[in-house]
Length: 249
Image (cartoon, rainbow, N blue to C red; front, top):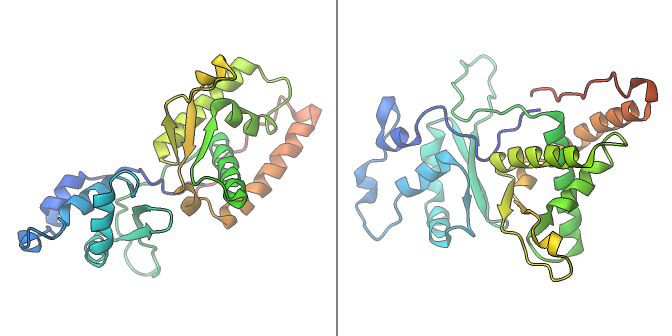
């Protein structure tokens, strides 16, 4: 399974699109004639490179909402569509769906990244944790210490797993999820009850995860996970069964 991550880079340099290089439409200086208006270039180029978050730059977010129709029109020429979630405060670009099988396929500007089963598992668990967190009606930011993430994953791993190796593996998977843009590493939070916990890595689950891991994705992955758990429960297959790999979409 290979969803487009919000931070997947373009196969071409984003700056060349803004400049109109390579035959792509340029953002004309005429669009900037009114200096009091937000700059279209300052929105399109960052969107081509990744996700825009309201919390990161309130002024840029306000400009995006103001110029949203023009941004949509511009990126549509590049076979991309703009996704804006005003409630959650993020925006990103994704490839337009190919609706006509007979039409020639356009080259993809946003590449798909295949994910291992372990990374898919972590994303599914974090998405479910986010749903539980939202249902509790508490804070809007889901922040987890590394130990909490380890406990989420532990139940789905073979019994007797080496603790140090387990933590190393989960940190590797977390780094991949951070690279995909679904989790952000934070500074360790002070904890007066435990000096050790204060030194633990702390992570924020980005709410954009909800846009990429939906109910259908979870249902399909749950079916694969159930089969994987059956394999773990079979002693004769514990050492011979390979970890399943998700299919590419």
